[in-house]
Length: 323
Image (tube, rainbow, N blue to C red; front, side, top):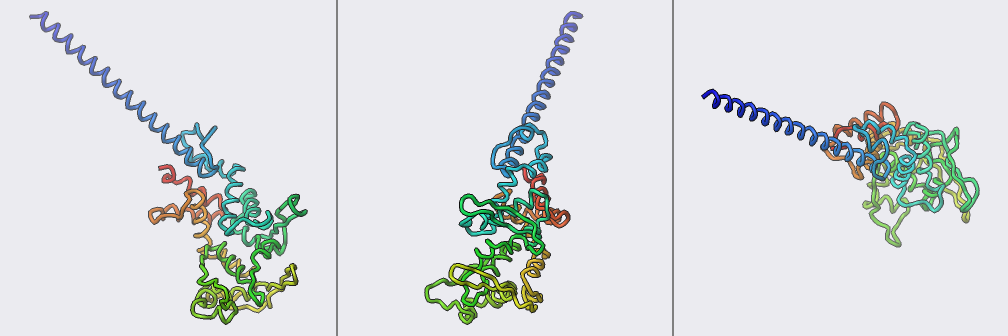
């Protein structure tokens, strides 16, 4: 009887040891599986960030990081990002590439602004000029300081590119392009038919007056405070506005392009459009309604620091970016 009890106790003890071993193996297996899952998540996040910022899969420190989002500030200083972002901004500010490099003034100045950590509004209102030295394929483009500069809006190549062809010299194209680039205004022409009356009288007709005379962006009213185009053969010059304040942007009294740009970059819509550009670069789309919180964080970051890097960082550092 004693031997039976002894054998039973040994069996029970051995069974407990086996159960404990099995439990240890199970816990160890779960821990390993969790570790592998965490590593996989980190790798996916690293690739997500690298593709969004640099256009390729993660490498080096980013690929090995257990917290890839802690590397966002480093990505924002990468020359590859700065180049890609400048090209992206240029594509949003123009409908097509310029005929020459200097015509893509938004590319050159946005690259300069990000590279030198300038305020994002300087792209539109900073004291700069975008100039070409030399001609043809040998021409080089640079950003220079200019006391009366207005971002790239007073650069010669941009002025000529968006001078338009209005019969009396009003720069209707510039009057649209300035708010388009700063606050994201989008308009579509209702007619471009041959023989259409494109004079001021024709633009005041029912089909056109909403954009040209009635809206807060009324193109004819805005153009009145811009310089006027004067053409002699292939030569284009610009005559200054009369300096008289006129009602523009709905109810504001403004007298020139500088006051127009200053009013636009001071608006909340400038912050909203800038963050929409940031979302577009990182996500390839506009924000969704469910992303209101991170979008607000982007606006707050841009408003606080003034830099586009802060806006991009607020989006990319949010936990939702790598989910």
